[in-house]
Image (tube, rainbow, N blue to C red; front, side):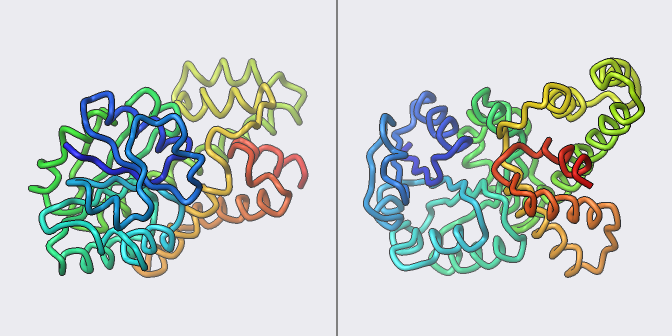
Length: 284
């Protein structure tokens, strides 16, 4: 199959390579052409040109505006993709934007799945991502073999936009857990107790989790080099709070964590790992 890929960052590049390794003919476009270097792919001059060459196009880029521009803007995918082709957007964007893009593409006979992913860079490298899909179930089944080269858990959540709602819920839980671990590690150190020993003790009980294991260890080691840059979680929490307002849902804990992310950005740690939430507590 001729498969396009846009968004060759820390997660996108290994995802694109998995698709190629599975036997797909890979086509790419990038705002920064140097990110295409070394890829076994045909490089295109515009998203429209890439879309015209492909049956399925994947995108994983930063913001709602970025995805909308690549999909619908001048020289966007909509101007190249043929009726019957599929856009699979793995970005984290606003649910209403996903629905709007899907509606515009549908007018041209182009299908879309909003299929955000969870698992971070390591999940992308290991092809163990969780994929939450919104869109037509039949379209998901058409591209499921491609998704299975990228992740281990693929769930059809509902119509377009539903995948992005699921991703918002994922971010709410995950980043709140990172904040909880940061507060626990900060309390341990402030009370004169070894945070490493506290983490070891907690890992064997009800508080044990992947977040405690990975993020807690980064806090113990004070290794704040970016796994996923905190600025991306800050962006995601803006989407979460907007979705909550639109739905009239109170999200008190999420709002509190959002304030901690705001403080983290103000301290200049946006390009560090989200485990830097510990440093926000230390600076308070």
